[in-house]
Amino acid sequence: MKRMHFIVILSILISPFFISAQVTYKVVKSEKLQAERELKIQLPRNYNKNTGKKYPLVVVLDGDYLFEPVAGNIDYYSYWEDIPEAIVVGVNQIGSRESDTKVDFETLLPADEGALFFEFLGMELLPLLEKNYRIAPFKMIIGQNRTANFMNYYLFKDKSIFDAYINLSPDYLKPVHSNLANQLKAIDQKIWYYIATGSNDIPALHETILATDKRLRTLENQKLFYYFDNIENATHYTLVGKAIPSALEQIFSVFRAYSAKDYEILLETNALVDHLIEKYKTIENQYGLAIKIRVSDFVMIAKAIEVNEKYDEYKELSKLAIKAHEKTMLGDYFEARYYETNGKPKKALRKYQVAFGKEEVAFINKDLILEKINTLKKDFGL
Image 1 (tube, one colour):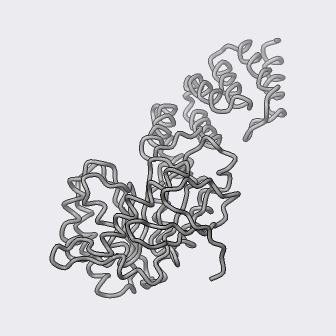
Image 2 (tube, rainbow, N blue to C red; image 1 turned 120 degrees about the vertical axis):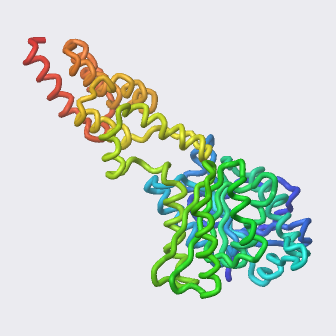
């Protein structure tokens, strides 16, 4: 594999080194492993421009082959704002995968090189990344087969250093398989847990995974977000291509903009603006991401207001829109609609006139505003 390497000592500060969503190869020297480890790192497209923004971290085990499908899906889905942009770090394990995941069959815990690799990830790699990149509190780890089993040991710590686990056809060893359900049932922090298998997966793995799912789906813990896919006709290898986007979509389902299905729910909702506010509070609480309310979500709420004739809600909606998109027509248009539908044409006219001088947004353009202004003048002699 042809690539340029920069040697990075864990104790030395390194500077950010990305221009866009392109992969950079790094080599880090681990004191725990007494060896160098190769990393593949992808930063979001506008990482260097958005200097005040923090991003979730995705650690990809088996980075030599899993990194590319994970990084590609994250770049693609985040481009369309279905999931948040994220920093993706792949840990290459060619030649070391077996030793990295070594477990003592008496204690059934990571042992020897496995214990050192476990400490490398948690005690060296994560602090290094947090020191040199703008990382949000939300952290995810992904693995397949042996590495998927191995990463579950972080769940058995007093506090998991990862918030989300994507298990691709995990080869669950007895201690994980036996104790996983009890651990997830009792865990006192929010955990997103995803498992994927395929109908043509390795039979022994498939059977164990189905048994694990049967136990996990019955758990009652409000802090556990559990997802499972048994992908039809997928093998141990082909399931990866379908499981990764499915996992990302499910784990970040609250993050994406309102969909057509969500709109149907909104039509049955009494407090529309409260629903919008709660959506973005949930995004911040669950993922540690404070983002502006999207224009498309404002438009969806406005559409529901019009259909249900809940025009009073426009007042609060306008305040949110002015705060989030001050330079656009959005907030002033909503406020004008509030006055217009509440029998205050003069105030509505003034607000439409203010909106006319601002940037067009979504369906709100100068032609629409002029139409509104002319209608008010004609109907009320203003």
